[in-house]
Image 1 (cartoon, rainbow over the protein chains, first blue to last red):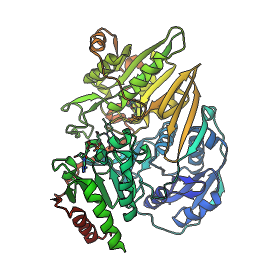
Image 2: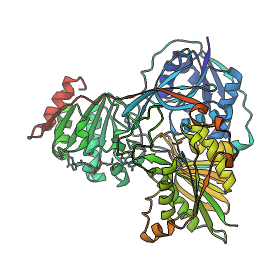
Image 3: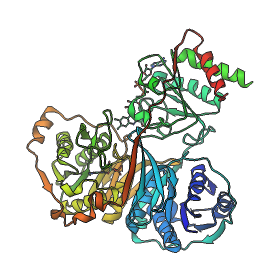
Image 4: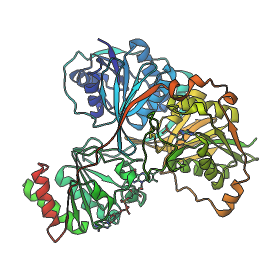
Length: 320
Length: 264
Ligand SMILES: Cc1cc2nc3c(=O)[nH]c(=O)nc-3n(C[C@H](O)[C@H](O)[C@H](O)COP(=O)(O)OP(=O)(O)OC[C@H]3O[C@@H](n4cnc5c(N)ncnc54)[C@H](O)[C@@H]3O)c2cc1C
Ligand SMILES: Nc1ncnc2c1ncn2[C@@H]1O[C@H](COP(=O)(O)O)[C@@H](O)[C@H]1O
């Protein structure tokens, strides 16, 4: 069976959920071969094997952390040369897309970004994408070269499928470009203890209606009662009420949870671009004309400062 | 010599309007209102600020570059009215349907022809939203990429900036020539002044076609593309939901609904 390269996104060897989703999708196309760059490959290989990776090609070097993107491209290309895969799959993070982009140029292959599903066909993988702020669903194919496809988080639910996960060392020679952009410092983002925004089953978001950083604990309180991640509109982020890493929308994160709760958010097209594909959408807004109500399964026209505390209390009571 | 900055700007369908596909499954750019991609306004803005602070004695010269149909001139005019010095428009009927790989090829050729020390891009185009062009340009031009910066400055031939990633905030540094892209966190873009709009009318807009760039027609366009859209279907509208007015028990009603859906 053909092999499919899967680029692994991990934190110090802890494989992140989007990679497990990628392995699950990769199995529709062939045997997944994972590419692990950085430390703790052994720990990662166990998980990768559980989710179907037949082989795990691993390389570790200081360059991966000290310089931007290009060393990882060199390594992925080395894996590509070694494996001659049927396709290369990369998680659709900002960095993932850049790695994929440069690889595509190098190997002269077409690239598809932000796929939400993949299917096999006689002519190679068919990628489903959600475009124009999720107004259209497209099916596309790479028509020249080896398909390079980036896949959005939450595109499928990870399924285990035990495979060997055989750890092999990948030898990587860095090109001249590898050291072009130096990472002079790195400050890891502090963990909030809440679920990761793009991975969460429930997201509670606050917008301009929250009216101040001091009121965001109200949104966090509801999120915690529901076991949800916290999101924010760009208006709330630009006002400095909540960190940009929580922004939902075109220039923030795309989320596709089981439940999205929008509070004090009008529902501008750029916000919708990031949440429109959520399974169930609920909104609280005091303006009955707000466009967000066009999307909702259930909406409350009311003051969030009244509705949210009552809802939070009720959720807590019901959960016991 | 002055610092030569090339800003890549895209002319895109207005996101607040009705966007759709043409019959050949390319983005319809003809029957819809277009404009300078808002995310590229941030690129123009940062270029203007870098030019203002340029330490070379001759200051800086900003060229705005677009690959796009005739109407894409509107995007160039807007960028010129914000304060860019001149514009290059790559326009050729054979370009219709070019994908990311092809566009990066054309842009790279046009950037080389123009001459550059710094290329500034937006973080993503608002229509294709790929966010891959800047990395592709750096790869093709063989220069460093310092991308997705929310803060950027250029001093002594070095570009530095802050990149807010998913897992960490990074400080980057690279020697010129380089390609940068800036995010919408990099700072409000200025509005063109009346004076700027008047001045833009007199600024030079150079038009280039594929011949001028030594590019064969079969390397670009729909037929030359590396990817193929096979189907585009409008997403069915969400079925109308229940909207109720809060009469004092809205929170409880909502909890009832969520419980019914098994979220609690
Ligand atoms: C290129 C570009 C990219 C963009 N990217 C994004 C993006 O990624 N994400 C994003 O969110 N936006 C994005 N935007 C901005 C977007 O266009 C909107 O400006 C933004 O989403 C508005 O945020 P908001 O809904 O919180 O604020 P508003 O539109 O001001 O809406 C606030 C809402 O809160 C309601 N409200 C006020 N007080 C209360 C109360 N007490 N109780 C209940 N309801 C109340 C109001 O009725 C109103 O509907 C982008 C814009 C551009 C041009
Ligand atoms: N046709 C184009 N002409 C000029 N610049 C472009 C074009 N397409 C993309 N760009 C630049 O590349 C950036 C990223 O675009 P993309 O990778 O298409 O999302 C944009 O913000 C622009 O700066």
